Image 1 (spheres, rainbow, N blue to C red):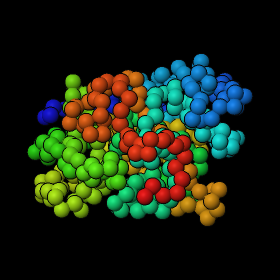
Image 2 (image 1 turned 30 degrees about the vertical axis):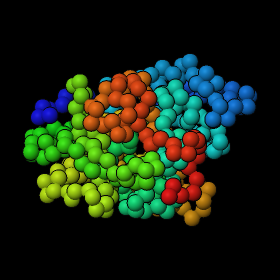
Image 3 (image 1 turned 90 degrees about the vertical axis):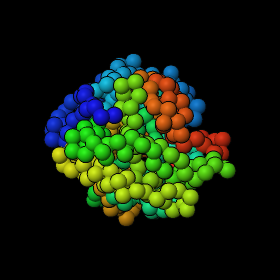
Image 4 (image 1 turned 135 degrees about the horizontal axis):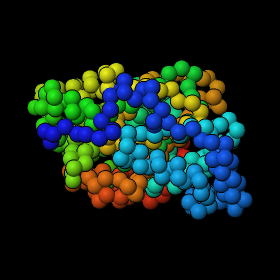
Length: 349
């Protein structure tokens, strides 16, 4: 635990903010191939719930996706695919394109107890600090965090009138800085914290669980961090109060993430596809202000993906990552209804 992490994903903000190594622009031939795959799905009359990877053939673009998957796990930990002109397509076609690309990338897992396997990121007026608060249903500023899956994928349909800046930091670089400055706090982050399920638990299950923020297994690092969920667990009387050194460790992690020395920011463009490895990357978003017209409001699509080249994880992460083997389908919040849904509507409360 008290060893520095090495590798290309251990970067600092200033080293990557002007780099194009994590950005790929689709060629016109690749866009044409995506359009042909969309037509193939439409011709067959397939729904998102019934279409397969084979229904959305990408003989050339699949090589870009293979490279993206490698970059996410063994490279910089992030990748942006750009060049899809979102305004050319209707909403249903954009969902098909996104789902088709996602099926080539990996396996989507449920993002809530409702079973939303293809989620919508937009302001539904949910307070992120409420017992059921989830950041993807709010327009509030988000703290640096990870999502509960191997890879989070976002597809930008529309941007906000103002704000909504995407910010990314390497948790590996932050780990090394904590090791350098405060190794005693690093030890704390490898120890269990109590987390709230935020309403995603099974019936009869305790509304909280224990899990560390940092873990190491078979030489591979993993960070899982959502401070609002740790703070939310403090409302339960049988959960121990956070100790001063635990609070200090979380404060230090937050301060490093928020430092421009460690993070960089980007403004999304409609059509952007962003992929992040949650085990190595922390992400955040500034608050945003929407347009008054519903059809113009900020709207992203989100998938939580298991990918075939993922790392083995520590048994300490077994609550969320129920199968810790490399390449396993894992993570997410299993549907408690037995159903899967492909659009997030209304409130998740």
